[in-house]
Length: 281
Ligand code: SF4
Image (cartoon, rainbow, N blue to C red; front, side):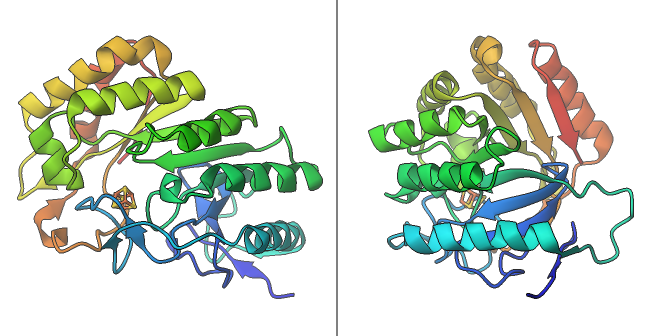
């Protein structure tokens, strides 16, 4: 059985040569994260200009083979148990298995099998003695929350223990079109976010960057804070990200990193709403 090489710099989803399941050493999760990729065809219903998925296409995934998903997850958890290699990561880097995350090369909830996949993961974790010991996470753009099946999957995930990281990169129609290439209206996004928070503990995740050298406009930040304010008491908090890894989209040359001071300034505004904020420059 080969050892799996994990580093925080290499997040390629084929490090274990599997279709649906991949391990990463994750700064986001603070340890080893097992990712579930329900979008092996690199298709998403959005096209965020900072998206790091190579050869991203618009669309949804092919049917998911739940038997294969189960086998891959069981096999990977066994391999992680017996042998991980950590490249040149510092010895102090956290190396515990901390979560299983639906986080793939597209929107996980666009798979018709999403609720069944949540059930499979929960069964595997229970079978490995990990139920209740590690977090089950869903990283989502939230766009399909109106589907009953998606709601069922999220509600199920919330029982694990589990939580949702819900993407909110902009809160104006123009901003959503510019950053996420979606026609979603801000009020619809807010309604879906509220619904999500009713179904499972929910964090907002927001990616911030310079576009053509410009900081996010004050009017965009004001709209973002106005969207979060009425929901503040129902959210777990906000993860603010800079551009950790390069965009694989055609806009990549137009994107630049915000420095930590700029991110902290925006974080301070969010904290004034009473929300917990974690910042990753
Ligand atoms: S929602 Fe996620 S996977 Fe889809 S385009 Fe945006 S960043 Fe990429």
